[in-house]
Length: 267
Image (cartoon, rainbow, N blue to C red):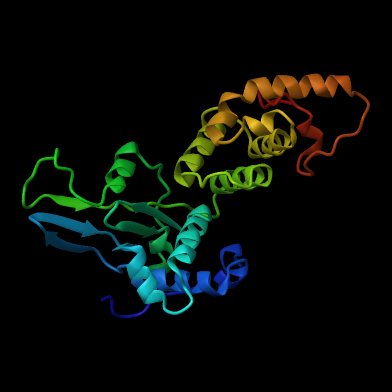
């Protein structure tokens, strides 16, 4: 069992993950922080070596149920894990035997050393999917399975864009599944950096698409937003031309520049 103490910043009290949480969800959140390993751990099981990075834990729903105590049911734990993942607080990969939970940005909060927010690679995601050895992989006793760190910087613009789109979608589709937030963040980065869109443009078209009777049924991910961008801009222009002379509510920032060609990002 882990010994010592953890850091909990007072700013947590002002964050929606805490202010909008039930009392049981708060218990689960603190329990997860206490269960996460604070240093790299290695062990052997059935001839294989395993490795956990700081901020990670291998657990199960029954184990979490036991550690959280009274009034915290397994169903409440499932709900809390999905909610925490939506906020980018953790990632949760599971098999029929156990689950790997990673506290996102663990080093930032526990060590005070801000590390990079590099894109997740396919190989990293694949390595996290299975918590048990793959029989088709080389079976060597000393092989080590490393569970990589996953980071979502809540202050980043790409995280905020991904979260904004998800919240807009949930308003239109209450039963919408929980997304892979890591992939959404990467796609938002591509929209801005590769496609040369501005943050304001992305924010505007997210709102526009989710208020449109047709596009809100199509734009259900950043990939769909990116794929249909030019078509939505063309339709936006047509609607604007039909209603020339009417006043539109535009973002306050750079209002005079925002009546622009969204496809090119030019005034």
